Length: 427
Image 1 (spheres, one colour):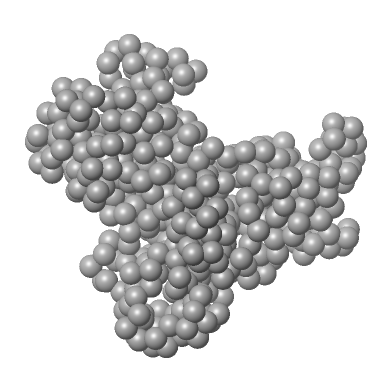
Image 2 (image 1 turned 90 degrees about the vertical axis):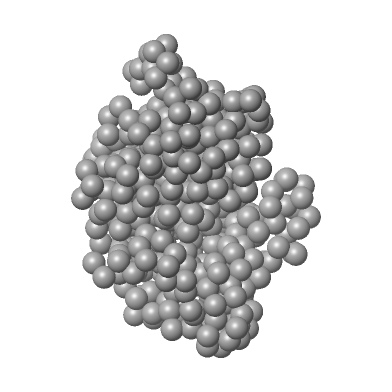
């Protein structure tokens, strides 16, 4: 049992030591959760806001005297060996420390994760990202580089793609044919949403307005389903997916094949549903070819006979991510990684008229949102991957509602995520 092995590491005072970047809502939550896992610790936390990183450790129960702020690798190594926690503004520092076992990024930033993961791979460290945005943007390249370096690359469970991957493997193990994989969206879709429009709901939820908007405008959902598509080979039925209203009682019939009266034109597609009944969960609608088993599943209330829906009613973000870290450490298990061939892309669409000199802001902002499509279509349209949009400078006018292309922007070519994406596209 993994839990017993973790307990043994705790007893031996040799925990799995994690070097993480990201001290925002996700990163600080991950630090708090890992404190409850025996035999595992976040030893290094990197963020440009070092005060936030210090607070994340302090809020998780680390005394101020045990928090060392440094960008010196020798001092950081000594501190971790002495049982201290290290805070740094250098995203690459943890990758330089012999004592660190696994590198991660726990943020929604592809730029942060790309720099962190690349440094980890170059430093011979396993990488387990709690960042699907980076995987969608440069995951294939990171996976290739990790393989060449003899280390592991994975995305963790906890967010919908990792949880969906577990369900996807489960139904295939049982011999069922996946027809549609998807998630229940937590809020109605409004691609035009801005931080101003969601400010009050964000305040009530104690969340950042940009983060909340990225959920409402669909950018996050498109990232999630693109990540799942690239790992499973499932394709969207149409640009942006369909996103029908559904409940557990109706989802099976909705996502049957069209030949049986449903929406799915063929097996292995990816989509999402709206409505409170399935919000926060993930599902796989399957076709069951064995009449005996199909009848048994109908009796067990997981289907209509020919089709069955397997539903996990929750995903726990960074809270369950440590399970993937333990599985990677003990069993070299990859929770999720993209296939070698790109399947889907999250494209950049203008939320307002953009003019030369404008700078795109961030996910959930005022200037752009993401829309999923097939990778070959995104390539044909020269669409800018939305993971590269934050900070891009507009050099040609783009009308509201139009696709922002590579030719419409100027990117920082020194940024790790841009360099990795260029390398990935050249594969």
